[in-house]
Amino acid sequence: VGSDIAGVSPLALSEDAERVFLLNLFLYLFSPTSF
Image: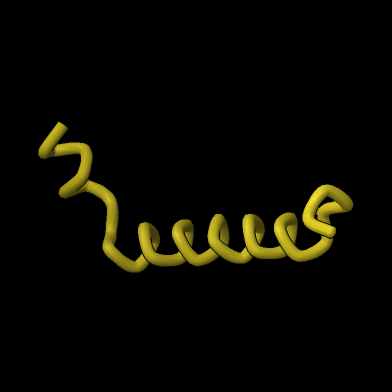
């Protein structure tokens, strides 16, 4: 597992995390169930 994590750049991880965060935020704000 350690080698797999080391093989991925921190930048890619942060970009994926930001993308997921924005997607979740979008779904939360615009989901009909949130109103």
